[in-house]
Length: 110
Image 1 (tube, helix red, strand yellow):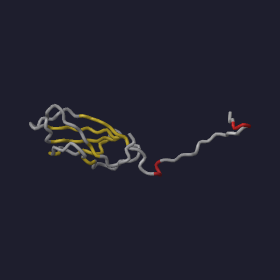
Image 2 (spheres, rainbow, N blue to C red):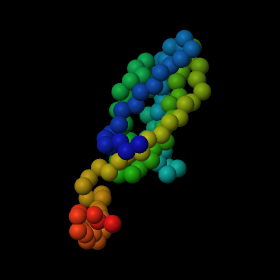
Image 3 (tube, rainbow, N blue to C red):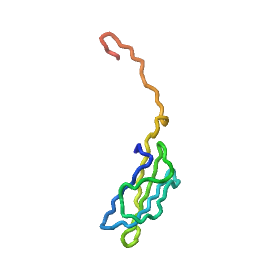
Image 4 (cartoon, one colour):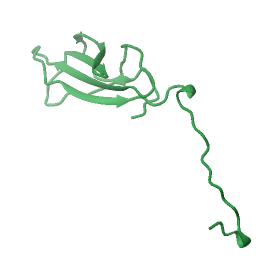
């Protein structure tokens, strides 16, 4: 939650003695697809850069990775999500919060 990078990198781990030969990542924002790698013949499972539509502050992205093993059999898709933090200083505003405090004799402010 609150990622500061609008171009995150994806990583996963292949379990059960299966060797990954192909992967496919899909990413959705608000129910709409923002990225689909298609089937990529590659065994790497770390630091896959996001190359989809531009992401913005507060975007929540649900992503799914599907792997194909050494026998070209797809594994069950696995999903996760992330949310971007505020990316630019203009994305937020605030006002100071203060109370009216009148010091009394002896420094007690009750």
